[in-house]
Amino acid sequence: MTSEITSSIARLFRERFNSKPRVFRAPGRVNLIGEHTDYNDGFVMPAAIDFATFVAAAARNDRMLVIRSENYNDERVFDLDETDPKPMRHWSDYVRGVAVVLERADHRLRGANLLIKGEIPLGAGLSSSAAIEVATALALLNVNRDSLPPLELALLCQRAENDFVGMRCGIMDQFISCHAQAGHALMLDCRSLAFRAVPLPPNVRLVICNTMVKHELASGEYNRRRAECEMGVKLIRRSIPAIHALRDVTMEQIRSLNSRLPASVARRCRHVVSENARVVEAAKALEESNLSRLGRLMTASHASLRDDYKVSCVELDSLVEIASAHQGVFGARMTGGGFGGCTINIVAEDHVEGFVGAVRQEYEIKHFMKPDVYVCTASDGAGEVTPA
Ligand code: GLA
Image (tube, rainbow, N blue to C red; front, side, top):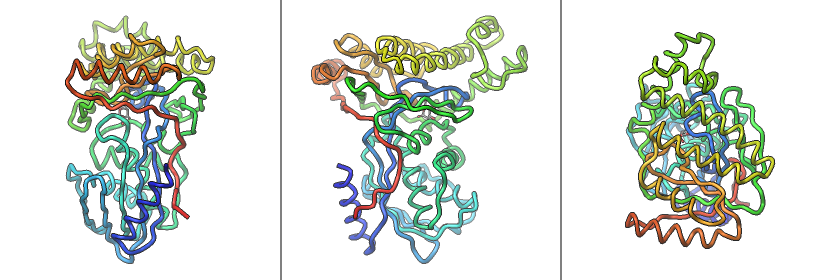
């Protein structure tokens, strides 16, 4: 599959730019549990999926970036010497942001021709943004005969999104795109950035159901949640100065300080603190192959995101409801930032077909939209895939 795509993208590049490119791949992700915890120094447990973004690239002899997107059938040209580059609320911001941040980090770049083709559904909460950033960073570094270790690559791409695009995302998406291991989820501590690979049982599948409702994270709700968490930390510190992030707070402390926090802030904090505890337990449950336990934790995570963090929506809730009533489903919850996008379902292999059929039918009856359903395998992290 990947080799067909890489050959086709290399051909498209040759047709457009008349030279042979190198090709780089970065996967999207699905998060099994641990939502809105990464920017609170907490825990997450994502896996990379077998949808990816590909960037074909070759160096130029000047300082221009010529970027073509096959998905948008659009092309942009940027000068790396432009002073004070600004985002334009455009697909190219992710690519340009990476170039800007690389230069600011003293990686002097030559110009490059880039051709981008992505398979990750956009705005579906499967991290198409991190994938385009990571594949671009790999491409730009490599055509400049430069490189970075995976952790620095992930941090740099997060910086491009925080500082250039203006979305204050945590580290989860870029981290998993750079570090993923096939057949595994990663249990990641977003404070220390230590992680361990947790094998996924062979007899279950990760089934992703797309509400087809696009989220618009950068449009403010996400950054607003983040600000509420920061306010929570500030207010809790008045009583418990030793804490630095919601990661350091216990459920008992939240309960006892409840009356000193604005109601919405208390709820946001309660989600983050309870979710962190669920991720720790979920990793243990997965390691012990206790899928019913994992499923109960996923159900609780969804309820908490819906009721306390308020980032779900009716379409996500109904996909979870449909899934939970189906045989062979161990767990179902919304995944990613929320406000639309996808659910993740852990489904016994021999129930997958029936499950997919039921979701398609019941969701369409309720919402007059056909949901896309993807049966995924956990894939490897980003790298070079230049065809021979
Ligand atoms: C988005 C962000 C991540 C993370 C999730 C929510 O995907 O990019 O950093 O915060 O939302 O868990």
